[in-house]
Amino acid sequence: MSKTVRIEPNVQFVKELQEVGGEDLKKCYQCATCSVACPMSPADNPYPRKEMIWAQWGLKDKLLNDIDIWLCHNCGTCSDLCPRGAKPGDLLAALRNMTYRKLVPPAIIGEWMSSPKHLPILAGIPAVIFGIVWMIRAAMVGSFFPVTEEGKIVYGNLFPGDFTIDPIFGLTALFVLICFAVGVRNLIEGFKSTVTDTFVIGYKKPTIKEAIIDAIKYEVLQHTRFKDCIDEPADEERVKGHLLLFYGFVACFIVTSIVAVAHWGGKIVHFLEPIGHTPMPLWSPVKILANVGAVLLLTGLTLLTRRRLNLERRKSRSNYYDWYLLGVIWAVTLTGIGSEVFRLAAVAPLAFFTYYLHLVSIFMLIAYLPWSKLGHLVYRTTALIYARYVGRLPIGEKLIEDEKVFVI
Image (tube, rainbow, N blue to C red; front, side):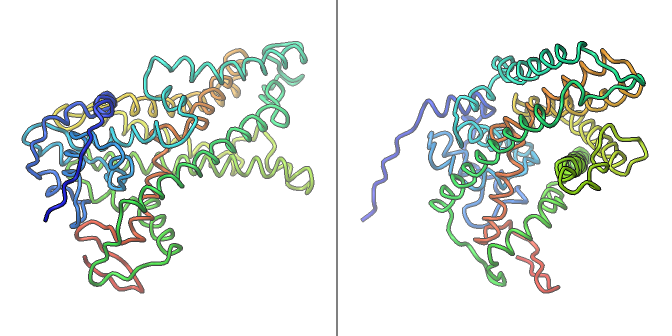
């Protein structure tokens, strides 16, 4: 005797999903073209067909605990081939956007991140914080645009690292790490309730350590699966843009880490202090790496922005989450470059104001990370590791083990 399953659609969830990018989901008539065309979809319970019907039914819990929304790299092939224009790729992106909003508390930040009408709040918080620092320090040093006796601009004279910048960003980073830890825990708990081991013949179950190493080595550092989504030149440009942006951030992170470690470590081991002393000369290896990172960011942003502007509406649509992320990274990059240029040109008013905007934009990038699209760097990596661990891999995936290649 068959078992009757009672389905209770969440109509409000469907409406919210349509608002964040899944407006065409009702067009789907379950032909399965999307799952057949997807190069990333596993043989067992392939996506995105099942997500389309779950979304139409409003099955919120199933969707927000679904590992497959993170395994999709949004190449747009499924949307391009959909005979009804339901845009399955946009739906999965919308589900990720919905997850960003609800995965970790405080929920109010997720709400602010979901609409441009809240942008003044998101920008206003750091603007006020660093504006107060600026006013207090200007009163202490006697100028809003102080320069040294030699006529040099030193940002640390107005925004000292020891008791303003470092504590503010240190506490912000700690807050973000805690939120990400909660988010990762919630993701994994959700995956455990919905994902089963799906190993195929020839696949040896890895340890969690091996799964982490392989996922980072192949899927993060090399974008291996991302490259499998290339169908046309625009897709190749997208992969290049992502890689350049990723390694630009890596370069900037290394520079920031060197400066921080040298500065604070120099208080104990004094020979370290000169390494992190700012402003650095242009020929300093650390400064060269910083400028290389800026060029990588600028190039990657140009490629990704151009691609998004040229998107075919029948294949995919951009949403606020996309443009917020690009906009903030553009702001960080341009204000960072501007801060260096105006400092070298000794234009104090422009230099300090641009540096102030740089601090505001960095705060917006970092502080809201768990609720922004860039949060996928952590959440998708978690999903890729978990999928590799339980064997949920695309058809045709090549797994390298002991220098032997297994084709699934």
